Image (cartoon, rainbow, N blue to C red; front, top):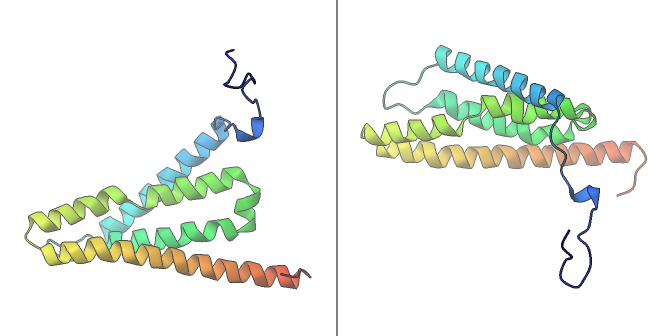
Amino acid sequence: MRPCPGGRAPSRDRSTLKEAPGPRLIAAVAAGGAVGALARWLLTEAFPPQHHDFPWTIFGINVAGSFVLALLPAVAAVRRHRELAVALGPGVLGGFTTLSTYSEQTRALLDGGAAGTALLYAAGTLAACLAAVSFASRWTSAMQRRRFRAEGGDE
């Protein structure tokens, strides 16, 4: 091993090293992703977008997914169980929400001559997802503060 500048050996502090995900975590993400993708597919089959219309289904999926993802850290069961956290976060919600369909639908609207709808969809989805995350974050922070006070804590 080559010494670092200054003559010291590189640090071997394990707290800064990320462990590779084990097979249980990989399986949890894969299973969750399959569930999320299937749910998205079923919704888009039940409520398909019409040509040149605002794609409400994917808009709703992305906003709802953003909101729920922002709620996850406040759920005690999710914080305690890493497998549940990865199954729900990058798994279910990662499979449920979709940047690629959002992008493709925006492109299709532009190609179809619906530039106004495309702009509204692109900007509206971003704004609505940010608002959903902000609302969920504020809501969960308030819930956590109330729980902390109820347990006798003093902020």
